[in-house]
Length: 219
Image (cartoon, rainbow, N blue to C red; front, side, top):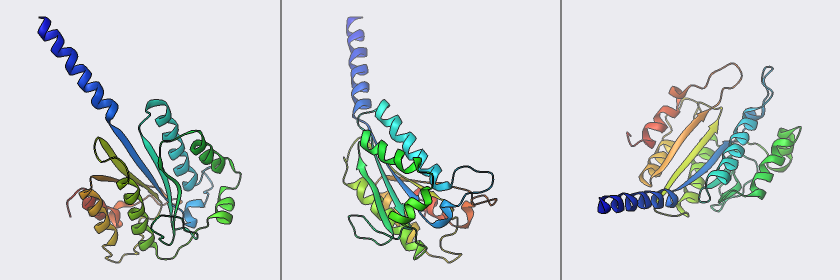
């Protein structure tokens, strides 16, 4: 009986150590095109507001629930650029790191502005140039950020927030799908959080279903 009891204790300790060692890394990849800042008659918040609010809520939760998890925030489709790879139209707002009081405050300040779109346009700006390239390089930037983190015991995820369900305008451009497949090979998970644009629902079948198949290793 004593041996069984001790075995049970050891198993519990091992499970607890595994839980404590596990880390969750998330990069919020947020579309910064002008449509994300449009406000419909029925909605008080823009799609950009909603995406930022999600990043803020997750960051707050991570501070309370875990001391190991890291959050990053990246905008794509921007006028200005700020990223380690010097890509155009990609702006790293927050590097992948442990969320803290300052990172929370930065998101709160941006969200608290009465005219977020004007503040954003004045400081970072939106761009409609090279949409496909901006997304692909946004993914490369996010992937690069995740690669710099720990190698073991880590869930690595990229969440794309966008209201553009057809960034390639119907063309058969494979760059984003190829990038998604490369990320999958590096154990990086991709999730598309499609946001409705006006009265039109986000249609995954136009483009992003192919991307998700590639991200899930289905080619």
